Image (cartoon, rainbow, N blue to C red; front, side, top):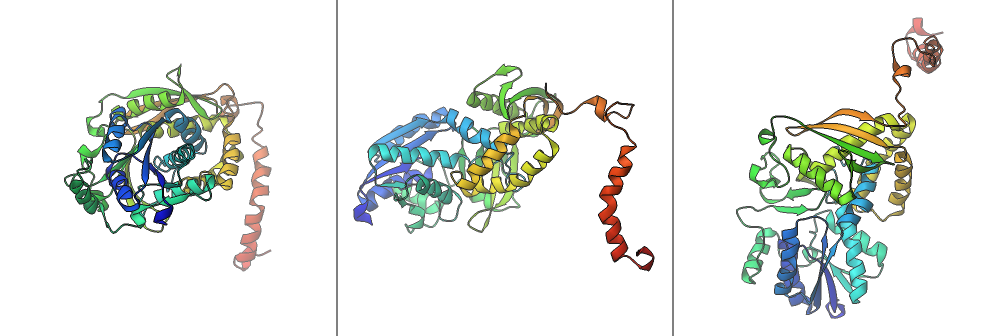
Amino acid sequence: MGKDIKRVVLAYSGGLDTSVIMKWLIETYGCEVYAFSADIGQGSVEIKEIKDKALKTGAAKVFIKDLKEEFVRDFVFPMLRAGAVYEGGYLLGTSIARPLIAKAQIETARMVKADSVSHGATGKGNDQVRFELTYYSMEPHIKVIAPWREWDMKGRADLIRYAERHGIPVPVTKSKPYSSDRNLFHISFEGGILEDPWAEPPEDMYVLTKSPQAAPDSPTYVEVGFKNGDPVAVNGRRMPPAKLLAALNEAGGENGVGRMDMVESRYVGMKSRGVYETPGGTILHAARKAVESITMDRELMHLRDSLTPRYAELVYNGYWFSPERTALQRLMDDAASAVTGVARLKLYKGGVTVAGRKARESLYHPAFATFEEDTVYDQKDAEGFIKINALRLKIKAMVDGSGKGRA
């Protein structure tokens, strides 16, 4: 296979894994390596340093593409319309970024006529699946090099030693042996000291959020406006997707909103511990639910909710470009089409509380729900409604009960 590898496009972040992989690919295959980095909001300083670092490590050329707007508009917002949360807590910040990165990586490979692509995902994790399912969905015959499945290095301690031998500067040190992944939607931490699920994450690890104890002593109120299921405004000011999410990240982070520490089930079969910060995403989920509560039909909402776990699994497992996710998305988008309105939220010391919601075409009408007299609902009709719905329960009791309960 090595003789067939001439030109590789590497998904390059500048972190420990991909920095080592860059040098390893060149040494192992004697090939040209093109570094591809997607700017999806991991920070301007990091992006600025990537090009110099990649070239110093041996990259033939470096491609950096600004995908922030596409990321939020075409990946985060559709996922938000579906209400996707994995295993009750993870808002899928890393999962949703991988198909976009892989898509842009394949587009770069086509442009430079590369025969192969490579990534830094480990053989134990989910990202290898997410990257490669996207690769093959776009280029069925592309060659994929996954160094973690090929080399003899066993863990990040080996990588640190390799980097030190080759003079590769890396952000991970022995004093902070955990990895992080950041984009405009979240930042994640895993590995190293976090592998003990009993150990509390160190406070100095967090990047996007203040400690709830150190957050302001008075609440912050924020209003989020929605149109057809998508957030479009903050505090009455319309914003494009990336700017809107950044504004909510700032508001949420200042108030300690969006921290999550959980042990999740990886697609490959094992459990892993992840610590996440998703301040803007946490606010958007709460705001969306508030507006949905007064604009979405009950049965439509319940149908959507029954399918949301499946949708979340598809995102988590890497099937973004699958026909089943695409079909589910059409249903999710149709269900969200009526979600137009405004939610008012109170942010206070890590918590998000709905303080109000309104919509021009609200399905909630005080005149219908009131305990006072109204003209649209006759309370006497409830008796027949209850008897019809109780019929099967009465029959079951008569069949299953004691002699006195039988007909």
